[in-house]
Image (cartoon, rainbow, N blue to C red; front, top):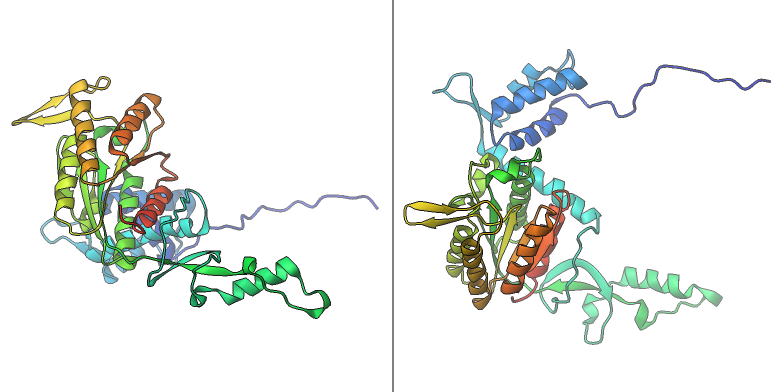
Length: 368
């Protein structure tokens, strides 16, 4: 009997889902990329619908827009007919979506996992397990995991069960300490240059971190500032609308504002996280600006390094997340980090969320 082949139409298994929920997930992503511009986000969603068939005759884009209004995600602007604005409910939804996107992956993956020994007797349980050590309380021993280890390590020869100290596992406890963090986001023009959108991932990390602090560490303080030619503080609710401007990079102004904010916080742990892709190129002088985007300007660099040293003296470590791989810029960051005795990560946009989250969790376990 000859072996033959039967041909039929290929039907992909992962057909796009239709309905409000699937469209809403895409809408939340697009409205973040468009900095809160609902009209532009819906236009992009309409184009995606034409290309990938996201809707059908039973549920179209018009139905989706009506549902967005009914569910309170967008509002008609009475003064500007035909325009929509996102609501506070959507702003919170975007933060939660960012948290699930970044923190959900973090819980499933070990990427960027920086362990720390700074744990101890406390009343806030961690999800981390470790081997039993002398001095650990009996209450901290996890019996299910310890018995499983004993069975794996010794078996049940002769019907006897053996449990040794090496089989015991305990659950870590974290100190309940307050942490004050200032997150600095670079909004200079280079954050959208060279065909790469760097500001959207930075916004997502900021929104996810803000939502994590609100949900899991409500006693912590998180301030967000942006820096271009100048630096200013923004509210968490303003993050979805954040845009890159035609700015240079005034890192000095950002650090000065961050340190001013931290001086007002009466917490044992204080830190600065800085997300940037470029070198400092600007200073404020009187009513004008001193700018030099060509190479590393000695005047700008020296003032930046002086602030790094000043932060070290008042025990404020600075963690720099450098989202570029330029060796020339990395050399400056290395010098900046050495002066501050902080840390630096040279990360692509894909791993940025993992690094920020693990470093935040690690630092809040100790007194800096």
